[in-house]
Amino acid sequence: MTTIDPAALVTDPSPLADTLIERNEQVHGVFKALAALRPAHAQAIRNIYYLGLSYDELSQRDGIPLPTLKSWVRRGLLQMRFILDAPTCNDVPSR
Image (cartoon, rainbow, N blue to C red; front, top):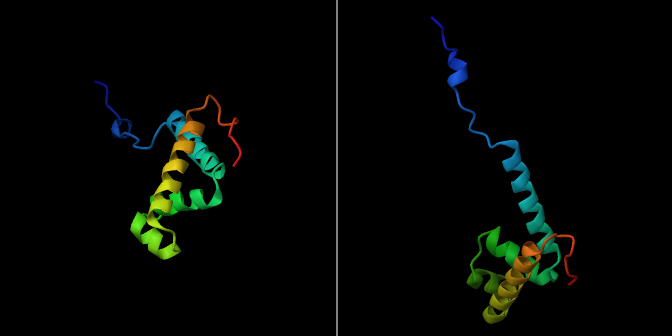
């Protein structure tokens, strides 16, 4: 009769190495795309997506007209999409 080691039945919930590498590449690509934007546009995107501020909150806090802020974010996200969809992120257009 063969006994099964209980430790062999424990699963490791951590992601596999290839998953971690892919995530790291995606994060690096996002940061590189943000760096290619005009500073004000990149900062607006960071404040909205990383800090969780609403357009209204950011507009009031920084004194930027709401339509201008929305345009900055929209144009910035479109430029980021273009950069991230490019065959290589080395071909990042300048600001």
